[in-house]
Image (cartoon, rainbow, N blue to C red; front, side):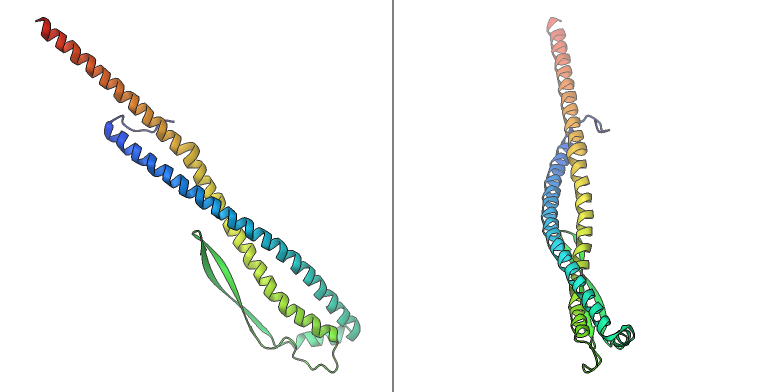
Length: 206
């Protein structure tokens, strides 16, 4: 589609500069999209492995809690869990990946996850709580990576739309308009040349 511009030499020069800029921007955006895709695919593999590991680990923790409950009884197990004095807080800072600010979670831990004595408690409960403590770190890492995937996917989609808009809309429109203006200017130049030749012929015949 032709752009709404006047077919003048000044406009032609401006459009040629705009075309150069659009092609440069198109290349940069394509490079950005490709790099984002590379990062995204690498994180997908990490998330897949991490999720599989966490699901397996969580299943093992649940089984140990069930064994501890079967060994000590429901009431005793609940009392042991209520006594925990461990506090977990999460701080968030942001990291820049190709103009995408992704979160980085840091877990801050205080207290002990096993506040009770070891005499009257089940060994399965001790193992389950220690495993759960380690599990929290892996779970936080998974949340961080999945949020990163989501943000990168949104940026990839936005960059893809910009690349397509330049490649299939703006650049072809500018090229078509440049051709039209060039043809129009050439036509005007030929008309002027014909007029000049006629004027010369008239003057010569006088």
